[in-house]
Amino acid sequence: MKNLKPEEDAYGQLVWAYYNGNEVYEIAERDDGYISASPLPKIYFSSYDDWSSSEKKAMEYVKGRVLDVGCGAGRHSLFLQEKGFDVLGIDLSPLSEKVCKLRGLRKVQVMSIEEVNFKPDSFDTILMMGNNFGLFGSFKKAQRLLKKFHKMTSKTALIIAVTNDVYKTDNPAHLDYQKTNREKGRMSGQVKLRIRYQKYATPWFDYLMVSKEEMQTILKGTRWHVKQFLDSEESNYIAIIEKNNYSETKSESNIFLSKYL
Image (tube, rainbow, N blue to C red; front, side):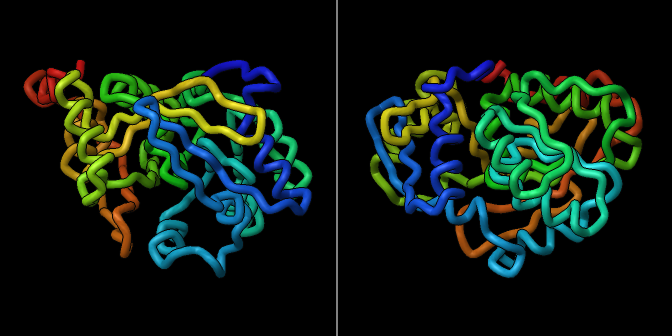
């Protein structure tokens, strides 16, 4: 999704509505017709005291200059800014950018993950909290962007990313969707969806959720590897991902899930 029109900024509209004191629900519509509603805007504005233990633990790994990808209402960026970190938040939503600025975030830009293109050694930490590993969208796109992230970060940089293990479900609708995805040559957790709020709807987009094993396979050939997993009581988990600063051999870089390329 690039250059959202005002009528497409459904996410920004619900963030803006919550910021202005309204009770709102985020509606996620999947391309098979499955619809879910959740009070996520409340979470987007939550303070550190309300975060999960794994989320709090993840903040201990943050270092140096920070890029917060998909910063939303800015909860992580604002927390880190208060701790003295140099933080840049980016989000596709213009209204989210407005809310972040009103909440006191000093550096925030409207930018999609596809548009990220900074100079080498620009950041020491890339945050992808709030299940934002999903913004990679697909296996191939994830590898392409991870290689770009490698070029624009410092030698000891980390990616701190949250995702959801889609296999930890017994919901028949989800299991059927995963099966259909595999039959199409897609990853099980490659979900096509859009966000709706009142009369607003985002364009359809791919959102990628993976198991730990799938994440490790995606990382092969990108010169990143998992340093540690932080588990939660739910199906989501946090990956602390660090750089490989050696040149991978051809055999290492060719270990892919070829059917997803």
